[in-house]
Image (cartoon, rainbow over all chains, first blue to last red; front, top):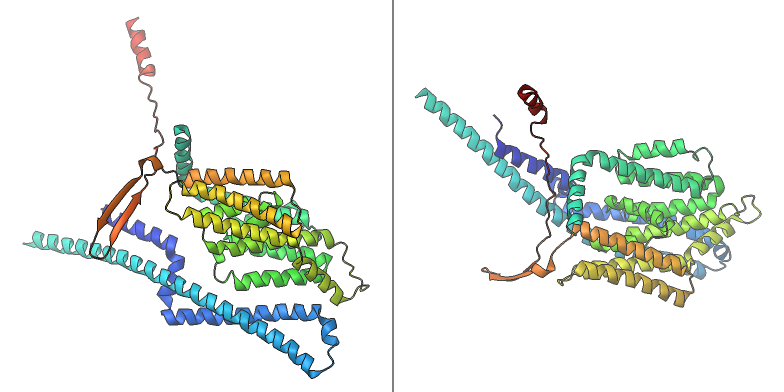
Length: 142
Length: 318
């Protein structure tokens, strides 16, 4: 026979998983420090790639200036300018990544707690049903 | 007014019932519109320039997330531009990759905003997006809306200049890149519109979170006025020209759309607001409870009683 209580609980868990499943991934698969490190590493690689693309485009656009470089000091000033741009941008982007990934993980952990609590309720429901079955069997024997 | 609430409930139950069909249809329509507009505005590659291609791509998109639609739209733009100018293709590719890597690795679900913003700009109602996003989303939506705005003006520039760009080497490669990048970065209208959208989202978001009565309504009006002010400010300071009729009509339509959204999502009765005060071990609570206006759709069942059955009885009497 269909147990309505259990069915309702399972439906609510399935709906919750469908709605929040995306957010569960971080807390389910990683520790906080691992998740944040992973995000930082990904951001570092992504930012470096983007900087390389923008720098390449910028160098093409400023090709005439670069061809007119006559001294080492001038070359150094250009390199310093690009390196400073890279480092400042990287620092800002890393701080943003840190804040966003920390918040994402906190949200994921909160969602995970709710999800586990619901699963526990379902498990208790199963245990209760099993116990009722066992008791009814024992009652029939006696 | 009651009729409107009944209509809202009917609409909600209709959507709840046919959600599985309505969502793919909306995705299909959005996909078709996106690809059709790209083909209509760029259309340099003739092999892509057909309704069959648009329908096929829209069909693919209707079953997949909006991210796939954004990806396909990006590929289509690059394919069209590659037929017209290599330099523009490179600049557009760099721009799209920057957005993809720097922003969408965090918020992949916002990709629909990147498509929606240029579409609304095309229909001259870009002001609707800041109002709706300020009411529904967070501050992070400023980034995709600004990127979408930049994308629209880049596409507009490329549409106007791709045919004029000499590809025969008469102008040096470096000069061509320099011309494109300078033109894009010095587009004041683009910068003003980006600032307008960002300010609109910020103002609406901050006001609708205030604990005051009619916060949503005030936020909509304040957001529209902020956008109007930003455009006037840009006109005064940077000498950008936005047609007055178009601006006012766009704002009017935006306010109307935001009001409809407000009605559908948050219809509350401020006249029945209650203030409750209580405490527990750690805190004092001062709660303001505003009741929602709930009207259930009338479930009318017409039952015809015994017309068919009464005829034999009548015949028998005769």
